[in-house]
Length: 120
Image (cartoon, rainbow, N blue to C red; front, side):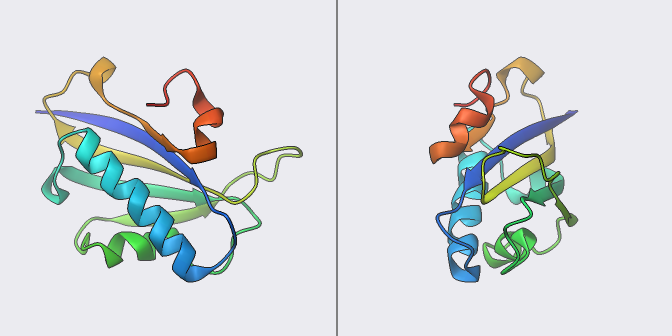
């Protein structure tokens, strides 16, 4: 079994804790589903949020969908002029037999514009 990384992002409509839980939960479920993963396949998840998001920790959404024993961390995204606002990104480390080239990275909604080269 190999260790792989899967990327993802979602743009929020507003800075609101319930909305963040909803959208980040949607992103996490999509990452798991599209890659055929379960919580047991997750090693860790690193979240970043743009500086305009401060209503909640993205990791709280992961706990809310039952990822209770997966190590999680949140960080602030770089404040780059002109960057897309209200974005939560994730980098999940997983155990899988899937080849690196076959890992499905998930960019939901407007966030798909961030990585047109790998967005599914």
